[in-house]
Image (cartoon, rainbow, N blue to C red; front, top):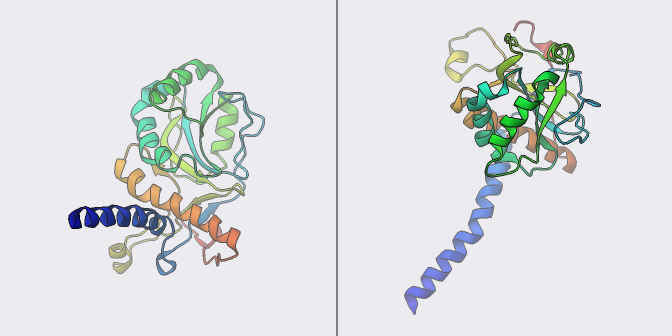
Length: 236
């Protein structure tokens, strides 16, 4: 009986502390908390563009991960799968979170095949496919701060984080501690490479979590921003 009692208490203890551990993960300690910085303002929204389920899609009032799938989305199933497994699955269901993939109008059917491949085991309720002319896609892309380019198919492996106020988020100084010690030149982080598992699993997941924390603190009136705007960094 004594062993059973110990096991029962152990199970109850685990059930109690698991949610607490999750909350500790979700709410970073204040002394470690560095807000995700604004690297570009006034990102063009996608309002009024058609989507895969005909629902209205917009960046404003949402935390958005933006991707560009190009004319042949199926060619980039690995990048899309990485994004799904390492970012989408982690944050799906969080209020106001979405992934938006821009696709040229002529690639709508190919994008639908990719979407069905990604939804084999679970529907992508918070992943929206938005269709536009390549001209409109290029115009939106030009409002982002990035050193990357859309390839000949209109695809780029990088994804971008857009906040609720249409600001692009990232890091104005993305140097490591060693680079800072060596006084290396400052360089920003403005996007996340979907081809790099470690970038999505570690850097991007952490940055999106930090952005959620910022908005949670703002709702509670606890947020004290020390972030710098893009103008504070003169060089890319």
